Image (tube, rainbow, N blue to C red; front, side, top):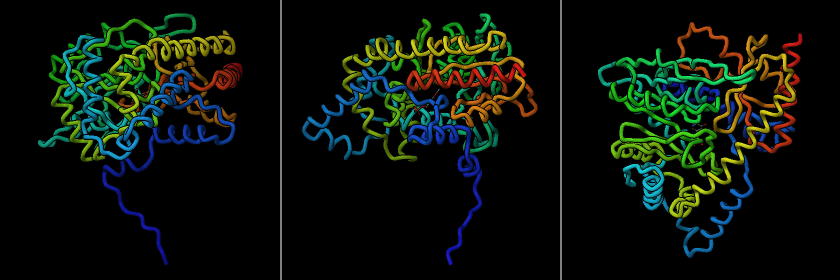
Length: 426
Ligand SMILES: Cc1ncc(COP(=O)(O)O)c(C=O)c1O
């Protein structure tokens, strides 16, 4: 007789094997994309299929196939753990020219997606130390990216500071860093922000970034900036900001949001020492990186075409989508509903706040799911707060992605608005 075995899990196992918000989200996303029922997926981080961009990937694959040995080399060779050297050299050239940063290919390390880069960086910098002490990652602007929440292999390691809420219009608000509260103690290993921020679409101002840099520098800790939606690619930023970097910062980028999430390619820009550490972790955890994304993108990085695509195609596409989604919400939500949309400064979603919401965001999510519309409720994005924190804002927001086709987004927004109007009318 075969008996099913169930083994006890280590702390690592318990933290990583027993499900997470990001896991549920990716499952929902996968099922919806696989055509599971007639679900309107306004929840996940799936980028849009921009026809002009998809055409570029197809053309690149044809070029690789036409090149003698091109396909065989891409599929049949292990990459070096730091990432393909020609790809990293092209990146270094691009960043030198575009931003004037003093970088060489040694300042770039490729990872299996941005998500993996964060798993490596957070766990290398924070957690338990040889003397028994513990260090944490400071998130100075909460809500923050759901994907960080469960990445600790040991005890929880986030300390987060609730954003200050500033109402900027009758139905608009913006989060600001509460600098009175940003005072990292000796137990803080690094400060981390996503810019543009997932979930809110906030873009930290140059002034806010500068202040965070100063605070990190004074403490001798790195400032990590997650540039998954930022410049120079995919450049889904609608406000005017300047990308900055020096060896005291760690910047991460990803090929996902420009349209290559299936290739699982992330990029870390950091000091050579940090890049060597990331490369060491890549070899231990996965031997090597995926080649395909690097190979598709390399000539586009070398020629600068990636900049044109980002500026002229990708950014305007999402900016238009964002405006449309905002107009649909304004049309569908009753004006008496106290809703506030975070000022849309970048990324792929709108973040809606329903002030004094009579139900929780989680309950709204359940009701919408029954009606075939998926969004992400705010509870997931507020982690790293003391357990006794009772901040109702954490239960009053939803994230709505506008990357699916326009009819799907418009229909989804109608259903969301209908449900929310009903909640306040009762
Ligand atoms: C802010 C942010 N960082 C990192 C990632 C990780 O993306 P990937 O692992 O596909 O590069 C995402 C994905 O949605 C994100 O939104």
